[in-house]
Length: 390
Ligand SMILES: *Cc1c(COP(=O)(O)O)cnc(C)c1O
Image 1 (tube, helix red, strand yellow):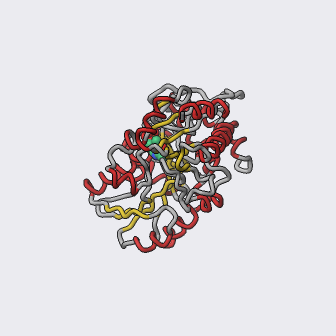
Image 2 (cartoon, protein in one colour):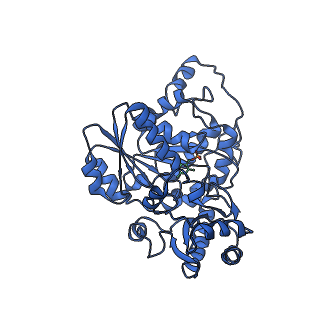
Image 3 (cartoon, helix red, strand yellow):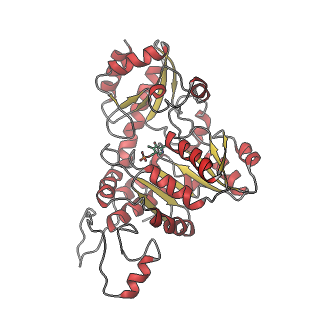
């Protein structure tokens, strides 16, 4: 089925054969374990990620269907689904790193990942060098004998910087490093990092892949069977396993991912373009606008620019807070990637641990508002934003 386009593959999921007919949708296999006729099959299933189903922490048919679906969308041979995005990121980092190793990571990182890297340094002496997301020469300069991996995000939060995946991954490969890419914001509809040289792709499936703000999950997709097996044997010890019901909800979301991404992107283009012309708005940050510092990198890498953007209000923090309390349709809430439009004020929520200097270094203003644009009618969203701007 690999010749089919992602939109088609997402709809036609792998189906189990039940004596000559197949359920059209994947059932929820709500069982913690599996019984065997043949002890040799039992033993084999314990040792590999694609063997017989043995025990729920190792694998489950509903979870494996999700793994195969997302691996297919990302273009990798295998995947490991987890209970959350952080579960996937930690499984990969802990499986691939040892005390004393060195990591190169882009500076603009999801908050949970940034905190995790700081913890790896404090607990295991794993040093991290931070670089700009589109500067391959900074990767080459940062390499040490103990450097193991480069960590990137396709599109970062909340200023939506886009990583130069081909350039950065090539620099990593030349130095013998693995490249891990968090592709949550782009989804495999906008970007498939393995095509650009990534070795591992991670997602918070909580966001676009599930898409309906009703389930937590994560997944790691591998570019090779070797890496898949290596991380799987650690994953089953760590136990950050996906639950079959969560996997089923996520799988259902993946079937409409392509449709939703189209609408998320189109709605965002309309809002970002109109806000950029509004007198109460100082700047709009979306890589689809020529004013964004990542515009050129993004235009080469992505067919469209995603459903998250942020904007700075000329009135600073007071204007940001006034906007937050004036919207009627958009919801004031964390997370992103769902069908509903959500807004948040990074300076007081997602990035509250940064002081004024840290916020400035991240390019986040006191009056910056982050928006995860949903799939509502764009004119209803614009009417809401316009009235909230006063
Ligand atoms: C939400 C998010 C995560 C963490 O995922 P959880 O499902 O909340 O654990 C990681 N990376 C990015 C880019 C995210 O947006």
